[in-house]
Length: 248
Picture 1 (cartoon, rainbow, N blue to C red):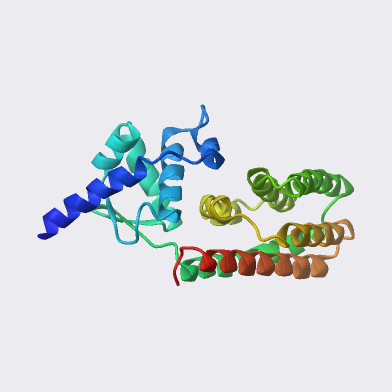
Picture 2: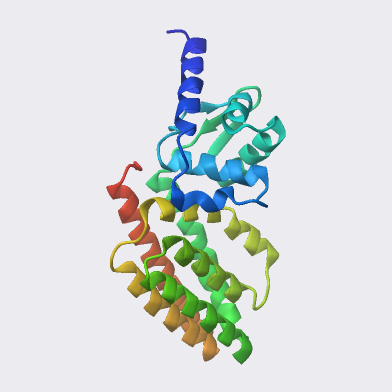
């Protein structure tokens, strides 16, 4: 088979795979009011994680436009967004090449987060006010309710909200942009793999210790508990994906 035939076959398979129905747990990506490029980016992201788009597979804007029934502009914007996340690699005149979401890739993401988030939490804990702590407690209450009823989507959303509220005590827009780069990927992985049986209860305890450090304005404890929380989350997610279809 020639290279051009191989590419045509790959693109055809991509169309068939991507046309598969979006799982009910991902319906939030299809809500009205969400920009088209974000909806497409979410759909492609899940297709990569689910293995419907494979490592090294070529995705062209024209074929994706046919699959999702959109013009080329939102498709290009979605691929640019996914390129910034590292999920696809863009090549001039060749479209996008899917990059494997491997455990090594995830380890690199968490290395960045471990280097940044605990430091930020420690700094913000030192200046937290009673009002900001009450806000954290209110979000944590919603997080615990979602975790206890097994609502993965709501649990992930409230977890993101909690950590964003901690950072918002003294905003750092550069840090927000760095951390937001992989939010979509980590959310999609949680929707795909969920949580281990022990993780929700463990995470609740970690959140409580971290919020208490904010209440006491103890930056050292906040750094320590934030580090433990991230390490445990990383190890648990890595164990889940290693047991699934993601390779090393």
